[in-house]
Length: 317
Image (cartoon, rainbow, N blue to C red; front, side, top):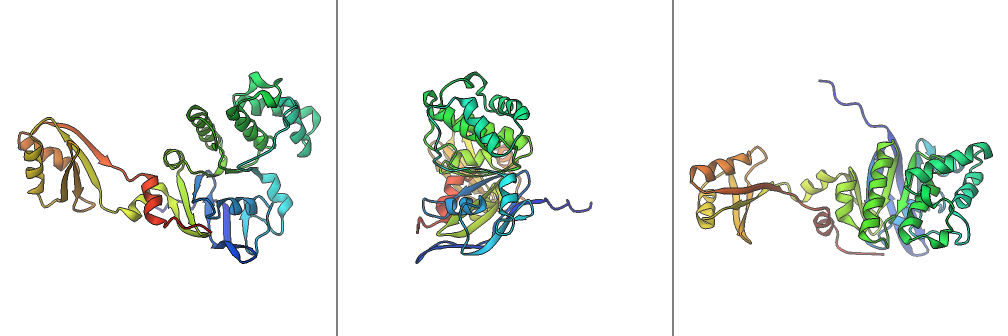
C-alpha cells in the first residue's frame, strides 16, 4: 500500500527565540502542529507556553526565528495571521455592563463583519457555545464558566481556522471544565485546529491527539500522546485481578518467560510483558489452565501526568 499522504501543516515555528533582557523565555523552538489537531501545549509556569502563544498571536515579536500559520509568516504578514487565528489569553477583560450580544457585535464590527451579517453570526456562535438564552444578559451577571464560554464565542466571531487558547479552563469548577472540553471537541470536529495550554493534564490526555512538552523554553517532546508514553515506558504492562489464589497466580505467571516482571500490588498483579509481540491474552490462558479464576485483565496505561513528571525536571525560568 502507498504511504499515507502527509498531513498539511497549520502552525510551524522555526528556531523561535525570545529574550527578556538576560532571561531566555524561548530557545530555538521548532514546533509543528497539523491541520485538524487538538494540540496540548504542556509545561510548568514559566516554561514558555504563554510567550509562544503571544508570539503566534502577533502580540509579541520574537527575538530570533519566525513562525507560519496557514502559510502566513508572523513577521511579514501579521495582518493575514490575525484574520486566520482566534487568540484567547489566560486572563481576558470583559465589559461588565454590556449585554452579551452587544459585546459580540462590537468585536464583529472590529473584524469588519457587515452589519447585516453580524446578527446571524452572533446568534450562531452563541448557539454553538450554549449561550443563546443569555444573549440579553449583562456580562457582569454571568458565572465564571459562562464568561469563559463568552470568551470562546468572541474568539470564534470571525470564524478563524486556528485557535490559540491559553488555559481556557483556568479557575473553572469541574462541571464547567467538562463543558468547555466538550466544546473544544466539537470545534475540532468542525475542522478547527486548536492549540491549548493547560495544567489539567488528565483532561488533555483524553482531549488531545498530539502534545508538546516544553521546559525552560526548550521543546522536550512533540508528537502523539501515545508516542510520549512509549518514549518513557516502552514495555507494556497489564493489570490482572483474580477471584482467589493470588499467590498461585503469581507463581504461574512468574514461571513463564513471556513475562519479564510479575508483581502483586493491592490485591492485583502487575504483569510486564517481555516483548512487544507478546500477546496479553496469554495471561488469561496461563491462569485458566492453572485453574485460577480470572476477574479482570486490562492494559496499564502511563498517564500524561506521569509522562510529564518523568521527562521534565521541574525547572522554570
